[in-house]
Amino acid sequence: MEKEQAELAVELVQVNELVKATNAVAVPNPIREELIRTLTPVAERMARYEQLAGTLRVVNQAGADDAAQVDKEIAADLKLVEGNDVLSKIIRGLDQLHGKAVAVRSLFVKPMKEYRKTIRQPVLDWEAIEKKKAEEIQRKAQAEIDAKVARETAKHEAEVQRQRDIEAKAQRDAEDARRAAAEAQGAERARLEAAANAADRKAAVANVKAEAKAEVAASIIAPTVHVQAAKTGMRKSTAWKVKSVDYDVFYKALAKQDALRGFVEIKTTNMERTKAANPDTEIPGITFEQVTR
Image (cartoon, rainbow, N blue to C red; front, side, top):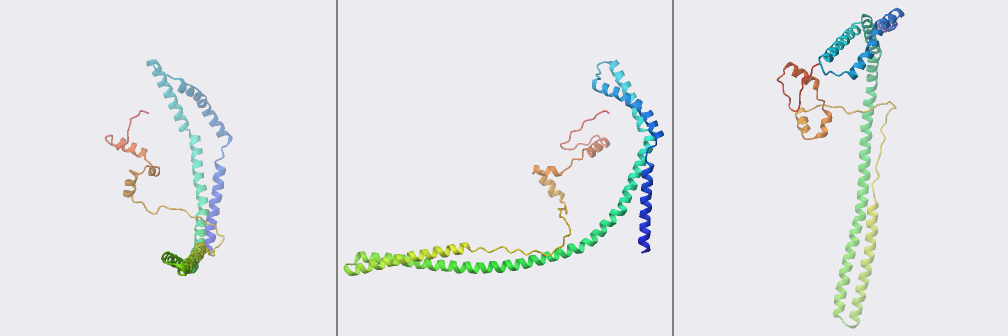
């Protein structure tokens, strides 16, 4: 309890310091007036610099000398603004204020994120276990339904096959009876023809039954089982993270797949620094030029 009170006291002290630092960066009127007095002439000269930058053309020595003189004037004004003590103090104050504000925010945000993570993890673990349980129940239930449907389908398909066998035998019987009738005379011929017709009717009946059973077998579809896992209303999100990178494999693929180029950043600044340190440096595919500033 004493430790918690001490930590709270430290946090409140830093909050108070932040408030004081915030008040301290307010620019009083004398300083504001000094800035206006110092920077107004520079602002007025900038209009001339802008006009010259847009229209200046150097075609002879006089023009070059004039441009060089303006460059000196701009350099002096840059030094005046960049080295202005009042502006520098304000910037330092704002930088310090930014640091204090970030530090105070971290006092609250960092531990609360840790508390939240610690509290959330058991819930996430429990939900993961419940999800696996639900998936196992769903898998078993689906397997039972699929097996039942398979048995039912197999029964109808077996009946289809039985009727097809009856149909095929009846068709053979009809053919045999007609061949025999063609060679017979009188009453025997009439009997064989009647037998052939009866076999035709038997084959037709078997065909109808087979088609009907085939339709029944095709219509049997196993329903999909859904088992809802127990869960809380705690908000969460998922994201993909790069677990590892095999650079050799990636770079080999990069040479063949243009789509991968969007994942690569060419650090031209590092190349320029290397070239400046060693002018003989050559990098395949990179063209350097030396510029004067």
